[in-house]
Amino acid sequence: MLDIEELKNLDGFQSVNMTDGQMLRERRVVLGLTQQAAADRAGIPLQSYQQFESEKRKIRRASFQIACQVLEALEMDIAAFHHGDYAFGEKIFLKDGELHYKKTGKPVSYDPSDEE
Image (cartoon, rainbow, N blue to C red; front, top):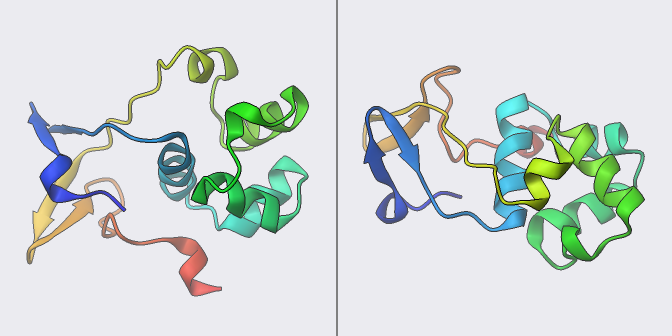
């Protein structure tokens, strides 16, 4: 989950320093996917996908094939990810003391997997 203290305002966008696991989670949530849906898209077991998000297993240490499957499932460019070119710029706003995505209106803390 994003910490409000880590956020820095940049012209209506928010910038945050994210770990690989946080980046995978954020991208999955932006796409509106559950962890199961992301795992299914990647063709890997749910537990394996969960380990990448929780960083119990590092995506950068996975086999090239598995890393590519996960990144493609999340519609991410593999080379850009490898070179650290990903920075999320989803517009957010503060409502009732909680950050929400402008595009969907859902709280930043929302995770589609919580509804399973």
